[in-house]
Image 1: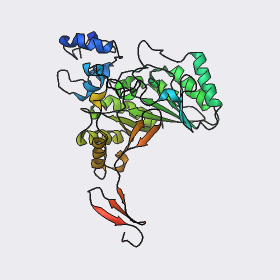
Image 2: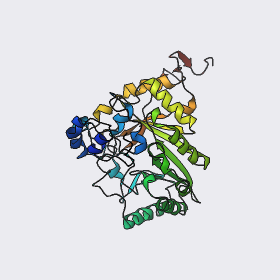
Image 3: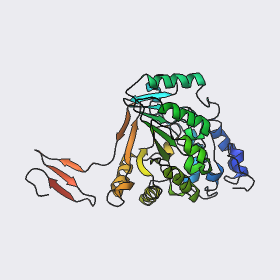
Image 4: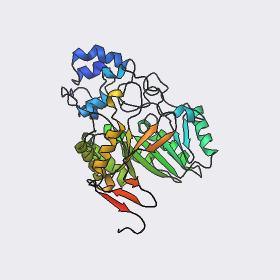
Length: 354
């Protein structure tokens, strides 16, 4: 990246001037940027290997003309958030938890984002005070809500003052016991994880969990690892979610390296998402069979600490389902055949040797 570029890159011209893409691509990338938001932080721009074909970092964040290829099966709201939105900013899909989206902006914009139609410039940047008050009133009125998940957008782009005020407000609701935040910030803008922001994440009355979105081991730079340490040292439990992406992490070696690096950073892998049917993202999607084969490879070869759940968000708002490989083969009667991690088959049931 050019030494003089120390701000977030937000246009294709910015990308050209920073040396991330050749000027010959300016027109085609501008067409993509007119449709979908672009933002690459200085920390992330340093990781892009300009001129390297299929660089896994560039593939996630640098616009690509393939994004204009929208397939018939792709949906503006691929996981069906709108079907479960009783008030603006709230998604109440499962009985004991809600998603609260206080902001609709991110530090960076992923090229495969399932909310790409609703985040970024030109969209409402945040809930209005009145809308946020209504969302909080909804949470207060539903005693079954045990957990509030802050998403968006990325809640960690909020100022420590605003974020701390929101977390404190949630902590004062008697039945809310867990506040979970979904974010990319520790990896893509690690300097933002300041002592003030870390303090803002915790409040009396509720336990805070933080879920890092990270897809490739190169994202876990020394600066990112230090930011995660600041969070872990403050007593905030850390999980991760990754998206299985063709050309980024869809090979065993990369996935193993990512999951091990996360655990080394005190981050427990939580979900490996099958890529959603977001518009213009078909070039990222693997097949479910390919994802299952990768999960089968991981079983027994990496520590159980490194094993995420492979999940699919069912289009239409029906929620997540685990879609990993199966290891049981039913037989007649109570016995089953069990497959071990090497592929060996073993009969298990009443009267069988263990």
